[in-house]
Image 1 (cartoon, rainbow, N blue to C red):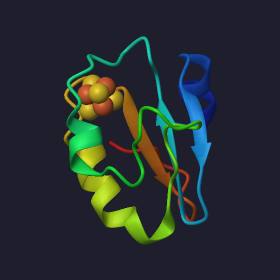
Image 2 (image 1 turned 180 degrees about the vertical axis):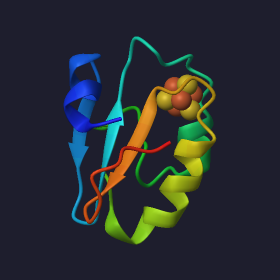
Image 3 (image 1 turned 45 degrees about the vertical axis):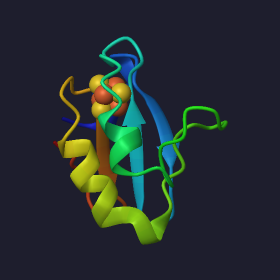
Image 4 (image 1 turned 90 degrees about the vertical axis):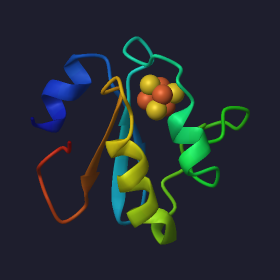
Length: 84
Ligand code: SF4
């Protein structure tokens, strides 16, 4: 999937230096998996609640892959492909 399609579906983009994160609140099932998996990048009480810190990239990819709803996606800066 390309970024434009994701934004058209209602996903919001959170930009980082080495990767971007996308989130759709209407898709989120509020399992809390993301917050439990990485509390540096995902913090519900902070604005923005997603902060794509470069040093957390690998951990965030794992966290996003563990999102049960598909509400979270990511894209590496050196790629055009949105994952997963
Ligand atoms: S892991 Fe996915 S479904 Fe669960 S709270 Fe985070 S974004 Fe929502």
